Image (tube, rainbow, N blue to C red; front, side):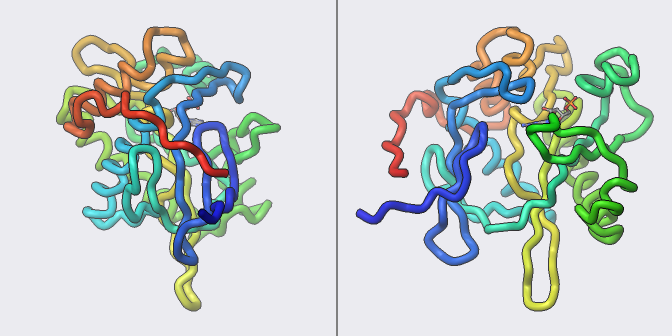
Length: 253
Ligand code: 5GP
């Protein structure tokens, strides 16, 4: 059997060359990292859950006309996605204060924000993904003004969709991070939602109890991360029972 080509290995995913030009296979690992990989663990079943949840969110977005890289899920841990050129920014949307915003501005976690706030971080692990402004983005050519208008519009549409979906299952969407990719179609480029949308990249709190159902469970040692993600999947009707305990496929690198 021919070996497939590994394109990139990140903290939570591996990207392989896809079967057709312009496609990529995205493999979800069980590895969990936090604080720029200073805290690490392997959480059995996390990759399976994030593959399913990201499929669910990206499919929902595609269906309401928000373009994403997602093509189809291939198996328990892999999905086929469009190859994109990643814009080197993390786009963060916040509905309630938490995390780095609470720390930076001294606002108590959970305080509702007067309107959704969009922030940008420059994607660079060595620098710890620093917060940047539109001035930096324009000056250093990471994205044009037109790109930024499109990125904000995409981010706010993702926020409306995700917040509504979560509210329907008793979960508050505190904040989330997305990444954006460029695709070229003839002479035109388009921006689409890429990477993943999962509890690894969102803050999700139970509306009634305030229980955290996202990666903060791992960051802050609040309990079993796979149980928290399973609860999100269960409420959304995403996972078949016991699916996280299916055996891992053998990786061919
Ligand atoms: P904060 O800036 O408060 O640490 O994070 C804001 C939101 O973006 C949180 O939902 C957090 O999970 C997400 N986020 C920020 N940076 C990263 C990152 O490097 N990777 C992932 N997966 N999510 C991130």
